[in-house]
Image 1 (cartoon, rainbow, N blue to C red):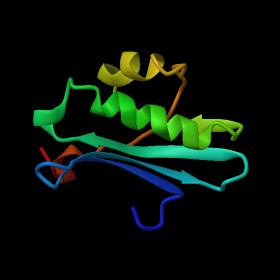
Image 2 (image 1 turned 90 degrees about the vertical axis):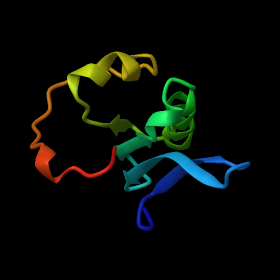
Image 3 (image 1 turned 180 degrees about the vertical axis):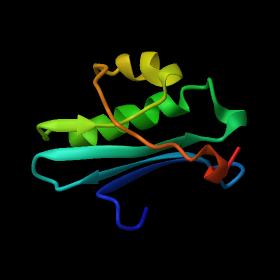
Image 4 (image 1 turned 30 degrees about the vertical axis):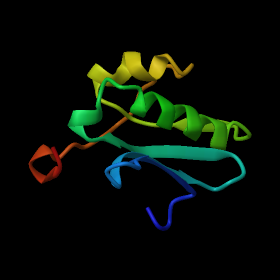
Length: 100
Protein backbone atom coordinates (compact mmCIF):
# COMPACT_ATOMS: atom_id res chain seq x y z
CA UNK A 1 0.00 0.00 0.00
CA UNK A 2 2.99 2.25 0.49
CA UNK A 3 3.29 3.02 -3.22
CA UNK A 4 -0.44 3.38 -3.87
CA UNK A 5 -1.87 6.66 -5.10
CA UNK A 6 -4.24 6.64 -2.13
CA UNK A 7 -5.12 4.18 0.61
CA UNK A 8 -8.12 4.47 2.92
CA UNK A 9 -8.06 2.44 6.11
CA UNK A 10 -10.94 1.61 8.47
CA UNK A 11 -9.92 1.24 12.10
CA UNK A 12 -11.77 0.10 15.21
CA UNK A 13 -10.17 2.66 17.52
CA UNK A 14 -11.37 0.97 20.70
CA UNK A 15 -9.62 -2.28 19.78
CA UNK A 16 -6.81 -0.57 17.85
CA UNK A 17 -7.57 -2.90 14.96
CA UNK A 18 -7.50 -2.32 11.22
CA UNK A 19 -10.81 -3.77 10.02
CA UNK A 20 -10.60 -2.91 6.33
CA UNK A 21 -8.87 -0.97 3.60
CA UNK A 22 -9.12 0.07 -0.03
CA UNK A 23 -6.23 1.13 -2.20
CA UNK A 24 -6.05 3.08 -5.43
CA UNK A 25 -3.40 3.02 -8.14
CA UNK A 26 -3.46 6.09 -10.37
CA UNK A 27 -1.49 8.41 -12.60
CA UNK A 28 -3.24 11.25 -10.75
CA UNK A 29 -4.31 12.81 -14.03
CA UNK A 30 -6.72 10.58 -15.97
CA UNK A 31 -7.03 7.04 -14.68
CA UNK A 32 -7.36 5.04 -11.50
CA UNK A 33 -7.57 1.36 -10.72
CA UNK A 34 -8.84 -0.09 -7.46
CA UNK A 35 -7.13 -3.44 -6.97
CA UNK A 36 -8.17 -4.23 -3.40
CA UNK A 37 -11.08 -3.69 -1.06
CA UNK A 38 -10.78 -5.89 2.00
CA UNK A 39 -12.89 -6.02 5.15
CA UNK A 40 -12.25 -8.67 7.80
CA UNK A 41 -15.14 -11.12 8.00
CA UNK A 42 -16.38 -10.15 11.45
CA UNK A 43 -16.89 -6.54 10.24
CA UNK A 44 -18.69 -7.30 6.97
CA UNK A 45 -22.32 -6.24 6.48
CA UNK A 46 -21.76 -3.22 8.77
CA UNK A 47 -21.18 -0.54 6.12
CA UNK A 48 -17.37 -0.59 6.36
CA UNK A 49 -16.86 -1.55 2.71
CA UNK A 50 -19.50 0.94 1.59
CA UNK A 51 -17.75 3.77 3.43
CA UNK A 52 -14.35 2.77 2.05
CA UNK A 53 -15.66 2.80 -1.53
CA UNK A 54 -17.41 6.15 -0.98
CA UNK A 55 -14.15 7.66 0.23
CA UNK A 56 -12.19 6.15 -2.67
CA UNK A 57 -14.69 7.60 -5.13
CA UNK A 58 -14.34 11.01 -3.49
CA UNK A 59 -10.54 10.80 -3.85
CA UNK A 60 -10.82 9.96 -7.56
CA UNK A 61 -13.84 11.99 -8.71
CA UNK A 62 -11.61 14.39 -10.68
CA UNK A 63 -10.33 11.58 -12.90
CA UNK A 64 -11.71 10.46 -16.28
CA UNK A 65 -11.82 6.75 -15.47
CA UNK A 66 -11.99 4.60 -12.37
CA UNK A 67 -11.73 0.88 -13.01
CA UNK A 68 -11.81 -2.27 -10.96
CA UNK A 69 -12.32 -5.93 -11.63
CA UNK A 70 -14.51 -8.02 -9.37
CA UNK A 71 -16.06 -11.43 -9.17
CA UNK A 72 -19.69 -11.82 -10.27
CA UNK A 73 -20.98 -11.94 -6.71
CA UNK A 74 -19.68 -8.39 -6.11
CA UNK A 75 -21.20 -6.69 -9.18
CA UNK A 76 -24.38 -5.52 -7.40
CA UNK A 77 -22.31 -4.02 -4.58
CA UNK A 78 -20.29 -1.83 -6.96
CA UNK A 79 -23.30 -0.92 -9.10
CA UNK A 80 -24.63 0.94 -6.05
CA UNK A 81 -21.78 3.43 -6.54
CA UNK A 82 -22.63 4.15 -10.18
CA UNK A 83 -20.19 1.66 -11.64
CA UNK A 84 -21.17 -0.33 -14.73
CA UNK A 85 -20.43 -3.90 -15.70
CA UNK A 86 -17.75 -4.11 -18.38
CA UNK A 87 -15.61 -6.75 -19.99
CA UNK A 88 -12.33 -7.58 -18.34
CA UNK A 89 -9.71 -10.25 -18.72
CA UNK A 90 -8.29 -11.73 -15.54
CA UNK A 91 -6.38 -14.59 -14.02
CA UNK A 92 -7.31 -15.73 -10.53
CA UNK A 93 -4.90 -18.07 -8.77
CA UNK A 94 -7.17 -18.90 -5.85
CA UNK A 95 -4.67 -21.38 -4.47
CA UNK A 96 -2.31 -18.44 -3.88
CA UNK A 97 -4.89 -16.28 -2.17
CA UNK A 98 -4.24 -15.64 1.49
CA UNK A 99 -6.49 -14.14 4.09
CA UNK A 100 -9.85 -15.20 5.39
